[in-house]
Length: 94
Image: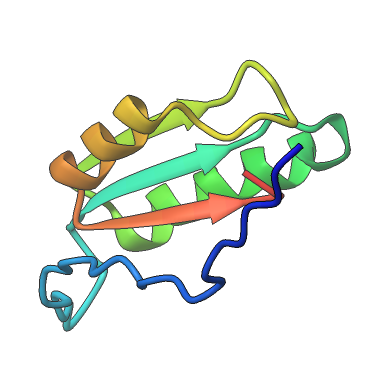
C-alpha cells in the first residue's frame, strides 16, 4: 500500500467573456424566453408573454419551453437563443 499526497492548490480556469451589450430600450428588439413549464407558473407565464408582446412589441420572439422541469435547458438551445436575440427573460427556475 502506498500513500499519495496531492497539492491542493489548483489553477483557476480563465474564461474569456465578450463585452456586455448595452440596450437603450427593449421596445422592438428581438426577445428570447426560457420557461420550465412548471404547472404552478403556467398562468403567470402566459400572461407575462402576452404583456411583453403587447407592451414592448418585439420584432421577434424565440422560445425555449423545457420538456423536463428540473433539468437545465440544453446548452445548444441556450446558445442558439443567445445568438438570435437581443435580450432573454428566464423564468421560474429555468
